[in-house]
Length: 190
Length: 190
Image (cartoon, rainbow over all chains, first blue to last red):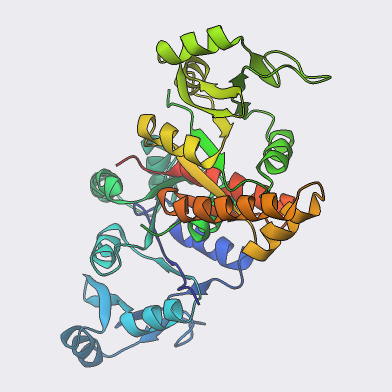
């Protein structure tokens, strides 16, 4: 039996990774979703093992020490990471799995899985990305400026990815990603 | 403006390249079809510049001498080849072009266009291919045996291609090829 695909969906903050990933999961119910581990507290309605694996700081540090995470990052005081076992077991069982993660984390995953399918979701333009970040309406000028600089740096890392998918419309972006998945299943291993 | 894709559809004799290519052209009217040059005589209904560019032996030898063919081959006493200019002009203009050619010819095209998209159409099984070859009902046991040996040799060349598409059903094969085209348009150049 052939292995499943490891599909990494990434892209700059604000590009709409979460929205596209949710829509894709509805369209492809057989696609397995990699659930992240985090030390932050569950928000209302969030379920352990569905939205996140909720871990204590100590449990998370143990996972890092035991190389049980494909990648992890710290935001403010909380850790977020991708548990290795579940990803490996899923693809070994012949099922495709999708990871929706940040740009830097994706590049770490690539070190372990160079044969993964690395998809970079892009805004139609940088202006569009700015509009989306500003559009949230909750940030100061200075925060917006910082976010845009980070987004520009992240876009510069696109060259390390296999595919660039423009998120002009969620359905169109999903259709392109579905095509990439079909194509990758036809790809002849080199 | 970005260049168009050079898509090469090949596969063993009897696999159904012609049928799949015709169906694909109906589904994708914007896809340009590379018309071959040949020295054989037009059959009833065949049009110059549509089905083939009909050439004299002398004209064809001149095209070979002037490097105007991406690949060519001789079957019995007739030559068949792919005119270079039309292919180059089409992709330079930003349009995708498809070449439906034999396995050996495809590998010659790859020497000129290593970035082309090389798709190998496969039978669901070798038995299926045998059934298709036998099913034509017009060949002797010995001719069938020779064809199958050639098909096996051709299938061994599949590893030089980018994608393997199973021709289990024409519509499904077309859908896979369409996905490959969409995916290749998203591919980040390395």
